Image (cartoon, rainbow over the protein chains, first blue to last red):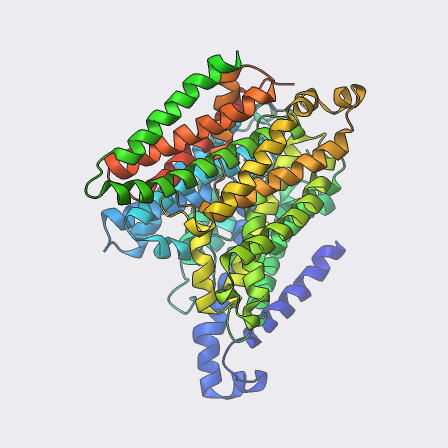
Length: 317
Length: 313
């Protein structure tokens, strides 16, 4: 309980910090009094803060659902090829129909993300259940192969720079009118909460789910849909952000257990806080220039992941 | 037995090399042979370095799935390379002699690899955890490298940029002589220890039982492995799954534990694969960029195959 109580003020503080941080030298008071400051707030700072919150919450929730579906703690969209599959779809549609609208690109990315994640889950089912760390390992290599295909296509057509934008998440391009698709991801996060109990039961395995009267296949398909759409939306609007879906659910589950009805709000809040904190850090570390939030999270999240991996003693599952 | 395996491999290599040197050549033979010979030497060196380092690394860690590059050795080398340029930006790293730079990088690499990986390998009981740790360490290294790239001068960045993407057709030939020397020395040192490697491949307990100081031997061998990785990364950039492809093939073909056969055979096989595919892609198909991507994708598929087919313990 104390965690939840501490989370809200912390998040509010971070949001204020994010609103006050940026390259323009406008002071905190001027932001609210000066018309130029207000304009800046409405067009750039507020959208950016909201985008970071939505993306963080969405990725953390997608991660926890993925972990329930694959029944493995070390899985998330970035270690299951979902992000790479979305990128592949994006490059494919860019090559086939360069002038297509952004919603069409998003649709293509979602479709390939769905197919890629379904392929991963099919592969995971063939792995021996007693070796849980094999699952993320296979996922990372699988993602690597999908990424190699993307690189191949992009290199031959001189699109490397173009895909680089999506492969490394960054919020510096977020302005009003450029991030609104992320609200869909926010909506799906709320929707996931409504179905939290079903995901919890699905996380106990097929036999248990069927035994408890749950349509296992439907829940799997629905979960897959949520994970793929959230990931594809995030990749297309801000780019891939690694480790959020992995470290946040793991830490929350240590404190609050695995009943999603209880833990999902905290997962979403902590994910939002983590991404926002890293984004603020990315803005101040080399002020006034910026560093992609994906790079910052690659270091911070990777370090936390290594700690998680080795602090569990010999259990690992 | 050794000749039965090594002779065909040597022949295949000679054929591949001859094709590489002569296919589609026009004009002055003196120039063509010198130009292509340099490339051929570089490719062979890289192939031998990757193959031998992978086989030895797999023997030390007693499994067939780990390779130095999967464990993040390449990423470490790139990090050191970038870090050096970053740290020396004031004193003009751009104008530094490539030989001096290579020497400094390799020395740092040896120290860092030894410190880092003897820690990681200490927890060798759980293979999956170790591999995952290696991969994540690689991600962290690459992120730190990316961070430094963002923070450095654009003109210095262009110097680093070409190093971060594997290219077999644009080998850095300035380093060829020193690389050849290092590779040959390391390979000779490893061949001299072939018997010790045979014993190590029995596993830690059995090796100690037979009178080999496992930890000391492993450390010394890791040094040689790091040296070979530095050479191949410096010449062509990071290649992740090529070593795995080669070692899987070598073990499949050789069917022996004897390292005095395994080491030269793996080097020859790797050279055949690299030279033949380079000939095929560059000369026959006319593609410039694809060799590394195709070989990497193949190696990745081999990796997944090996994992899925592994006997369940």
